Length: 370
Ligand SMILES: *Cc1c(COP(=O)(O)O)cnc(C)c1O
Image 1 (cartoon, rainbow, N blue to C red):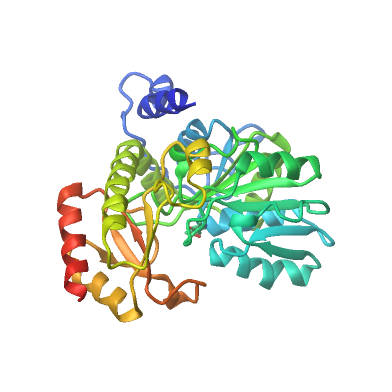
Image 2 (cartoon, rainbow, N blue to C red):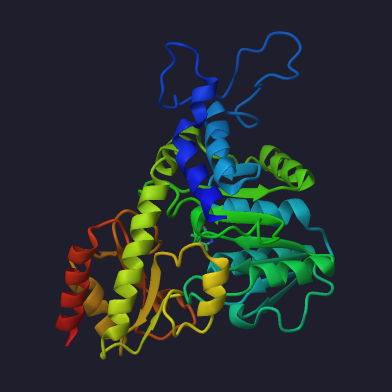
């Protein structure tokens, strides 16, 4: 599995070559177009900017190459997630969500799915299989969960939920296709916010859904075309550019996160350090089995809100910001958004800075917290 994903990463920057005519530009041209030249019978041609765009198709080809499955691009991660719900659910359906996953997925379901007559249940990621999956139309998992970094067994849940008749959806945002392969583990659909590491430069929002089920892909394409939840061509172009360096960025970020997590865990002044690659993570063995890398997010808990804020403000190499996965390391206190975490809990997103410089800055800022 590791070999095939690294061979996919290697061929990714060369994918366009097969389509190039002599004299064509090697980098992807940006096509800004609402209309296309369309005399006579329109069938089989690009027709209108809500249906087709060559720059979307190019970024979908890269994402599909990494996922090893057809991909549908959306203007944000939430647009991809809501498209899956709106395209596949109907009144009377029940869905199961993680109670500790990305907050907006839960709010969307409560605010828009419940009033349409769907039932929404939630369970903690760590005990997600408890209670079984009978009666669910969609079982939605997020592992490692954001922000707590709890882990659940994608293969086990996929087998049990599919046997019970559910569609299994995995939000793979925290890992990217290079770090975890939900479709290979049996999930039906992967959704992700390419806003994060895949674009990687914190300058655009983007998302995608991938599935090997042609009926799912057809439903998502129809939803996108009819609802108008279409990505902008320029955003697609930026994500295409970002994906060309995802492998090198993700490798650096995950390697640095492992180094930093182990050094943080050795400090005596932190309440806790959570990272799937640490031996004391409650699901470390499962993480070793199901993840190709341990990711670039670290959860650390300082003794108080004040200490956490002083740490973030005092570290010159940590950008205080929400979101994660950019080239710059960033951090924030998640309790400020109402997440069910300690007031001193900080989600640290390790970026691409040289690791020893980054560690010196983090270590120094922690020493300065007092
Ligand atoms: C950021 C994020 C999303 C939503 O992505 P947007 O591009 O902000 O809509 C969904 N799931 C997870 C796990 C995320 O971190």
